[in-house]
Amino acid sequence: MEYRILGESNLSLSVIGMGCWSFGGGSYWGPADQTAIEKVVLTALDEGINYFDTAESYNEGESERSLGKALRGHRTQAIIGTKISPSHTKSPLEIEGHCKESLRRLSTDYIDLYMLHWPLNPLSIAHFSRDQHVETVPPIEEVFHTFQKLQRKGYIRYFGISNHGVHQMQELLDASIPIVANELPYNLVSRAIEKDILPFCKQHKIGVIGYMALQQGLLTGQYRDFSKIPPSQAHSRHFHYSRGKTESRHGENGAEEAILELLKKMGQLARELGTSLTTLSLKWAIDEEQIACTLVGCRSVEKLHENIQASSFYLPKEAHRLLTRWSEPVLETLGFSADYYESREKSRIY
Image 1 (tube, rainbow, N blue to C red):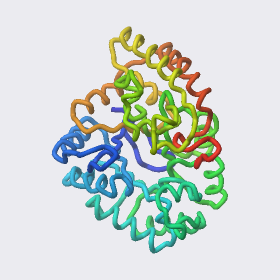
Image 2 (image 1 turned 90 degrees about the horizontal axis):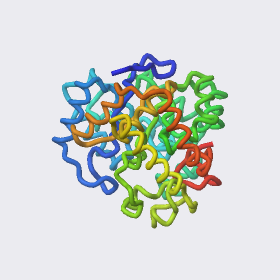
Image 3 (image 1 turned 90 degrees about the vertical axis):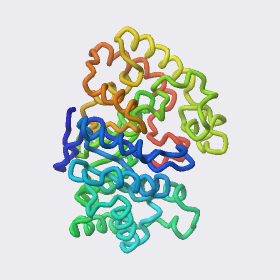
Image 4 (image 1 turned 60 degrees about the vertical axis):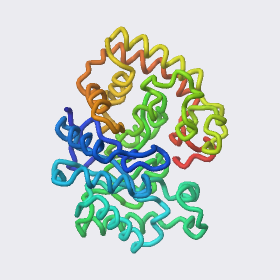
């Protein structure tokens, strides 16, 4: 397993990290088998995966609780990242309270990387709460100075952000707030961050963690017929807004034809190279050296081993160039908004 340093921290992350959104079950992912999850986590540790990513909002805290159980007796082998919702930042007292709740659920006395899940703007906050009082945007200085206090108390080692654009990162830099990481969507059909966000992060030495590396299963090739995708996983801008039904908020036409053509070409390339679409997709993302860690979720040891194969798979440079070129029509259709759930006009990431 290869490891990369995250920004200006001393956190050395495995290039493949474990996305734990599905841990703990819930309405989005369905029931979860805790015994199976514990096998996955321990196997991941044995295979060299050391970064585990969760959030307080994932399955109403059950993801954190599930991960904490799985890591009992192995805490020092793992680097844990979790995220606080922007709706829970009204005051320093509230922030500290939510951090302590995450610590309790994770069964740990410190969090390696504590992130603000979405930017502090009304649209982001409204997604997590319908309380109009909560939708008042707190000053960024107050929120992140509280993070610094949590750091001094030893509750967190480093703090970062998730889903922040260039303007939002510049605000933090202007306030002299040191950010070690920004967690963002990155895969063959979600390349918006390449234009401005990745160069900005590189310039300012902000580490990048890429999430949704397989676009919730889309890039594994399991969906040849998009009508079979559950609405809960078809409400992103990749798909026509009608597929997401009541889950969809973007009102856009999607890039379905371009994605289907990409998957067709990827299938042919995978056969030529004797590998799978999963390995091609993950390796393409891993080969972007500015991405410190590429997150992928799974709930079975079998799927985990398939994901891990990508870390050692040799992807020829020409194959990498082909994948990049073949995915350009998707990028051109979806544009450079890194928010794949709201319309470009209402992007929460700017």
